[in-house]
Every structure is written in C-alpha cells, then in structure tokens.
Length: 357
Picture 1: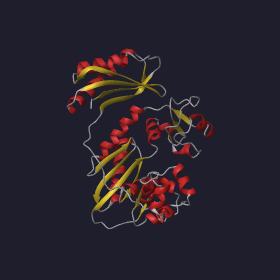
Picture 2: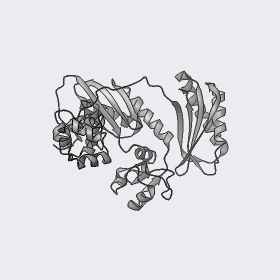
Picture 3: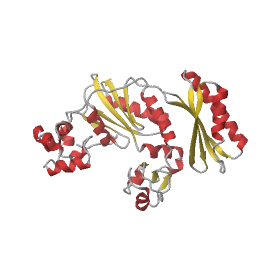
Picture 4: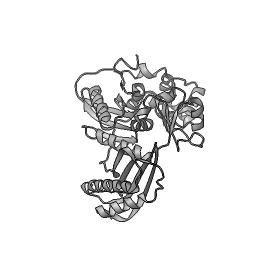
C-alpha cells in the first residue's frame, strides 16, 4: 500500500456509521513554521532555528524547515554542524513565548470542535472523536488550524493512540492517514521495531541482536523470553507495541489559559521612545480588558520587543499582588519596558499578563 495518494490522504476507508476514533494532530515543522509565518520572505528557503541563532555558539537545532532537512539538518543537531551541512540556511534564535502563544491558539481551535483534546506538547495533541467520516473531520480541523494560525498540520487516524500517532508519520507533510487493525500488518510488519512509538535506537539494536529485526518478528516473540531479556514489564510491552496494542482513552482536563497577550507588528519600525511607550500603554490596556474578561487577576506582566531586523527579547516582572487594575498592569508593563536597552528600531511590541495556577 502506498502511504499517500494524490490528495495526501490515504488509509483503509470505512462506512459512514458513527464510531469512536483517535486522531493525532501534529503541526508540521512547528517552530520553524512559526518563524517563517512571521517572515514570509523566508518561505521556501532553508531555515534553522536554535539557541541565539548563532551557529558559532554551542547550541542545537530546535527546528528546521523541510528545505533545510533536505540537507540532513535535524532537531538536536549542533548548530555548527547544521551550518556545515547547509551553509545557505538562515539561522534564527528561538522565541519560546511566541511558540506558546501560537500553540495555545491551535489548542483553542481544536476545542471548538466536538472532540476531547489531550495536549501532548506545543505542537501535537490527541483528539477523541465519534464520527462516521474521520477523514472529513480531520480535513475540517486542519483547515481551521490554517485559518487561525497560518500553520499546516498532519493528522493520523487510528483505532487507538499508538496507531494514530504512527499514522501521522505517514501523513506528513500536510496530509491525513488512517491506520487500524485492518492495515497494521500490511503497513508495519516489515519495518524495524524502531518505527514503533516507544522503541528507540538503542532498544532496537538490542532487539536486533536477539533476532528481532522487524515488527512482525517482535509481534510473534515469546513474551517470557522478552521478559528475561528486557525485564518483566518492558519485554512483554514491546511485543504489545509490535501488535499495535494501545490505549483508547483521551485524557482531558478543563482548559485554563496560562496567560493573555496582545502584540502589534508595525509597518514602519519605531525609533521614538515616547511612541514606543505609548504603544505599550495601548497594548497593556487591551490585555487588561482580556484579564477582566477572564475573571482572574494577573500575577505577572511580560513585555516582548522585536528589534529590526528579527532579534526578539522578552522581560517580565512579578506583581506585588495579583491585580486586574488597568493602571497597575500598565505601570508594570512600562516598568518592564524600561529594562530594555532600545538602541535599534523596534519592529514589534507585545504585552502578556500571566495568571497564577
């Protein structure tokens, strides 16, 4: 079976009768995609994000676009090696607050659908759904994410979490793939055990040393022998993975936002200190409106400044006590702004109010 068709969707099609499904949504090249979305001129170019963005520093790649990955660049690789493999790459610093903000928008978007959402991280989540057409729902969700954030995503559809998670790998980039008990053997049997979610390179090497070089061989292994080699818990568990056994429970808790933020990108860079302070005041007032609407006082206030061309700094302070007062939040934002050394033109300003949990 081919892993994708011309519409980038593939898998075993079922009836339109409603049944329970697990969807796994994974944002494509998430961190790099966020950076490219903020810099449209970089679209289609090799972009590497990591550390301060300086390949000479001892930091590693956090994310890379598919154009950079074509040169062998991958997450966790030292930036200096990435620079050697792809000298033409654009290197950018990481901006965690920006990724958190976009991630929260994505998760908010998912919660607008009649699904249970289990967040796995910034860029992925399991969705528990009941539908007769999971592919159609997956398409709707992907389109909603694009509308909300401009980011593409891939969706794996499965009858349990394991199969849904693995299906996403076949869906990438920007596609949909269904994996169930019906096509599990056809798709997975000949692959290395390392292809299974939960078995890494070292474990796969040990399994190979014992003669288990494929998922099919591991699926047929004697649980008692695996227990002797890998322990009474892990050994038999590896066999369950090879047979596609996984949880069907999507765990979710009521969503409580960690923060509320507002930001503005300026068509013309700001250089006047008074104008910058005025913009921070406007943003702080808008954030205060959000805080009041949330019904929870702000405990911490942060300010983000993006200098031209693309250097971003974030500073914050903890308030003496939580507040929803516009004057106190605005003054806190201006105090944080005073901690920046603004010697270059400002491209973007942001204010974030954080809540206690």
